[in-house]
Length: 226
View: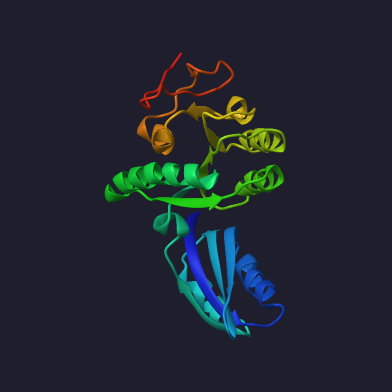
């Protein structure tokens, strides 16, 4: 089935999400992503869904739903923003990592790819652990970079949890147990995001400075494949 993105504008009143999704279900649409934006007197609902047939009958069906003001096609979020890199931790280190991430994203986006970068300066074990666990609930996130001077405890447990769910985690070389739990450890914050986009991930890698890591790069960002 083909994947389509739809933008449906509805009256801001209870039950509208149910009515719209009911119409999509009747058309055998498989909803893959949904987002709501509440405006002053209406709500925009953005869907990405797989459809078994043409999009035009779906739009007509949606426009006939009571309370729907418009239903149009839209570019998908993947086409606009692409894969996402999330950087979190101490403010100064986050800023340095962001420099490298934005530079690398620019190099890829010029070629027609799409990579976007999000940053959140945070301190405190509980705040960082909660933020790490929440990353996997964000759409299109492929990479998390942890930047700081000391991380461990609950943050390490959170890193292990998100890695089990398939998220790649890079850590700066810092004190604490987080570097041992990450996929990759780097010393240069500017190089951190570049290492994961420079070359394909090898099936078996080791980090020169840590025997516990699954993937690795040396200080220049080159992969060390075992």
